[in-house]
Length: 225
Image 1: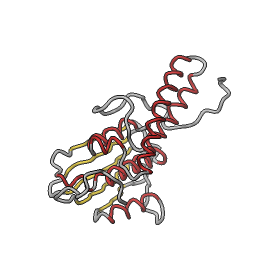
Image 2: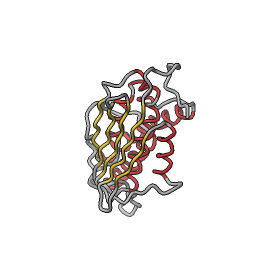
Image 3: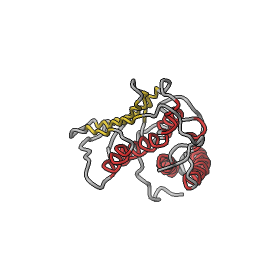
Image 4: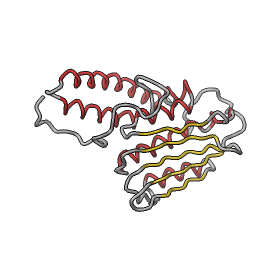
């Protein structure tokens, strides 16, 4: 494969492949948006390494093939109304850590959910989806070099979520667009959604969701809305 082949512009060119947070290893099973972005980024790196470092490029392609199988499994689960495997098997804390590890953008996770009660299972799928979509928006639109995602069990029984980036700022809640749709989703959960994004950044999106006292009646973590 020659140097004249097109080179996708995916993510910040200086983004390291080493995860920014600990907690899992190998190929994880996070949201398909993040996994697909990572696939695109890794394949773009592999393309740039041909033909100067064929062995490294081949390793990246092999890793991308493994990751594509995980993405397919995740999409199949979602189509059946099931939560992503890592969320279903290990819960919200592990899933948030994996979101940070799999992000194309260098991302740190701050997860403190030990104080959360059994009712967390009723909102964890929604919380995970909100964090995943916010992080995807940062990767695509913020022109950021790093991000932080946060999931904390707050006093009083609420779940606090936050995504912060060091991008260009200026994010707005325009009707009918991505952040506005997320606000509607959070308000549907009786939660609060706020955006702080001055021109020049940083941008901070905060979400606060009430957590039921008891676990949901159904045992499985299925997608219910």
